[in-house]
Image (cartoon, rainbow, N blue to C red; front, side, top):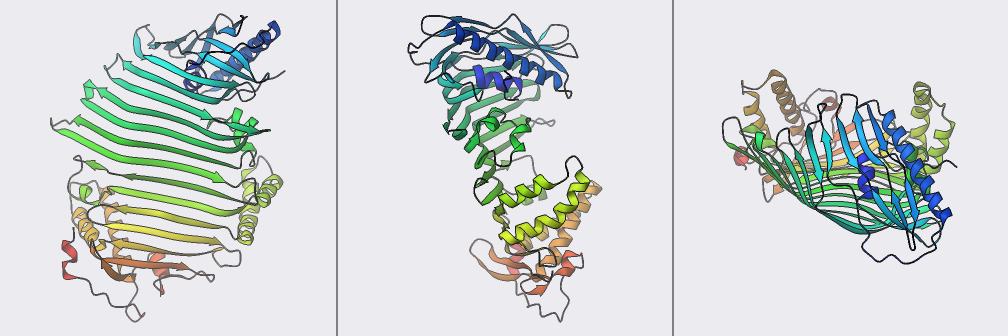
Length: 512
């Protein structure tokens, strides 16, 4: 019998699979020699698969070394499992010794699930080619509870904590201290489909590098993933390095993946001896897919940050760089069945042959379904400006541009930004490429400005507003004025086009 295992980076596999100690009493279950033999086979095949995956990685050639064999001993109320000693050996002569892992397993509600107790070897040490220690990973304490499922080769239930984790590097005396790391899985299945959260969190991370005079504190770092009706096969191979999970477009109804950090603060002593400081209040990056098992799906992507502060920027850089920003884009009303059928009918293994039917068929499919792209919650701001953008782009096979669009750009502080760019463009200390970029940006804003209408703004005095539209004929307008010249690099509208007069406050240059 061939057993398929998840393809994960080795250290992630070890931390996910063998990090935590089951803290609850293990109840007596039927323990048999046959059960021990099956567990031994499962672990042997998992280790064989992991060795093959490591050897296939040509980016950084290495070999997963195993010393000893898998031992499964049936005791009165549980199976005692001992794995071989594990190490990674690289082509350049360096190696990482991971050590021996011991586990206890109790059959739980059938022959697919086990209550697991285990712990990661500590320390895990990396050595250079001469045998000298380069870095060390050690764990102060570990506790938790988990139910492991042999069908998905990972936990379906997990609530676990690592405490006082320390990573040190002898090469530069740098260190990373993580007082607490948590992992929580709460997956539930109906038949072959799994739903629930898989969350990781680290708190109060401290990073220090004495040689670089660098200190960084991070309040929280999170990876939050929620899966909705994910198949057993996809869950078993759910990893960015594993393409199998993506082969079936309907492997799940939805996945919501989000990375976030909060409370980032750092400092470094610069070459001139001054302290260089930076901070970030919050930052997030997210990706989600929803509704795949229905008639229409949605795919979205977003990122944001706020509370950015630093004394490492001066002059125009400090005045122009946003203190907060966000971007969100989502494609909605995606006709799943029609696109799946199209993908199945495309010629395989020939990207060029695939492109032509995609170019002709996909816009028509999206148009018929009423699919559209929505750009929302998008902004960039600091004390000098506040710019926001909301746009909807609709697929339309009958339109000249194969789409229509409408949206609004609101830009408070546009005059201030232009004045700052003019100053920056005259800075002869900047590199020529940087100066060209600044001048091009200023030229584009200057061309855009006359299209805007103005309204009062409580914080900036006034705001330029640009209502954007792309119609079925392919005409692009801003506030009703033909703006194709702007798109094609032709600049601002000429007199006589009906462009309304702008009456800007005289204090516009002084807005802060």
